[in-house]
Image (cartoon, rainbow, N blue to C red; front, side, top):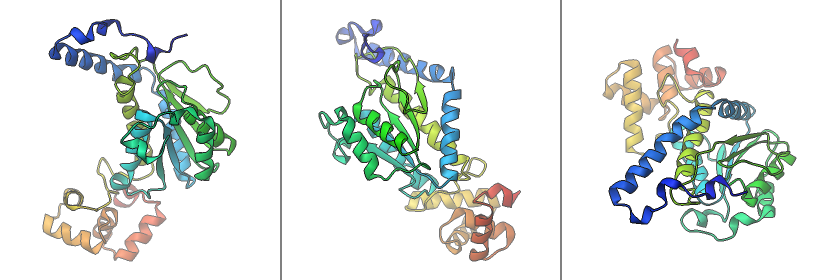
Length: 293
């Protein structure tokens, strides 16, 4: 049976004869349907997120594994966690078939080896406290399936994101996130609708997991890593908004807190030293709301 992602879209059968305006209007119309399709069943994503939250509570790690566009999106989402939530780079990792060269050029055949997928999981020393999310729009990438199989054997939680009916062996996959997005406007080009949907789902997974891991206060990015001028300015603004201090005082407070926004807020609210504020945060497992309420 032909996979959904490989079938022809009836609305784009004469795509090469369409005007630029008609092509981009069609692309926009197709993309508009994605949030509605995903929104029809958020429970499976909720279940995956709850498992990943438990992973972080157990000091486990989250791995995304994919090939081509899917792999690049996994690496992208993982790489955004340290500056946004000040996670250690090892906490959320992206694995792409073909290695980092595959981020900027196609590595032909990289996705076809089940054994290579198994090997990378062995190399990463996956443990039972870890979670591994495989991303394969087609659901048939051997590299991804090999990685999930080996991860399951090591006792890790496993999940597959796909946009086709998955009829292969499911015994080593704890949860499957699967949506029928319909055919791409270019048959088989899953960097399009499938790529958009993948980024949406990964945003939900990483963001919600981090929020529930005390990385956010209200909707403030309080665990950001102050690594450049833009993020330093954002950190000062966050402190100013929450404390009602002016920017000059907030900047000094941030400096005294060694560029840690959470510590700065606790120092100000509780009139504590840097060391005492750190100890209070650790006692509350980083939950700022418990301290500032």
